[in-house]
Image 1 (spheres, one colour):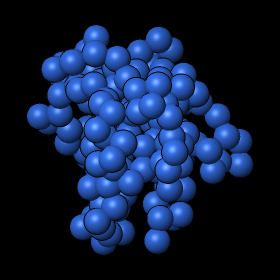
Image 2 (spheres, rainbow, N blue to C red; image 1 turned 30 degrees about the vertical axis):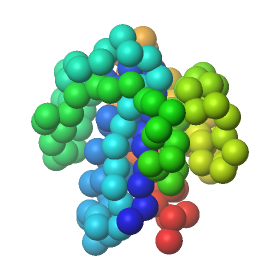
Image 3 (cartoon, rainbow, N blue to C red; image 1 turned 135 degrees about the horizontal axis):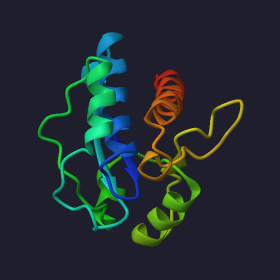
Length: 149
């Protein structure tokens, strides 16, 4: 089983969206049992909070249920527990490397690094654009799902 941790700042918008979108894509391709998905934030400011309501509504509009998901902070132990740690933006990658004490095994990557236009996924907490964040997350999840065979 391939273990993937999706990471953003607070773990209430982008990373839970990525966790549930990737899981949904894998299941629809009949590959759901190949993956263990989770998400975390680099900050503890949202610890214990549920998925942010607009993110939850966006997932619901895709037929995806994220009930029960609560924000948690990424830990150094996650580096050993997961095969791949995918950050939503460069700022997340920097914080992830700091938390993990570097990236000696090359496990930390940007979700959209394989895009024809590699880029950060803008934080919809600030932009209010959950549709754009969702499109970017779907693009990144699709690419990683294809890469991991």
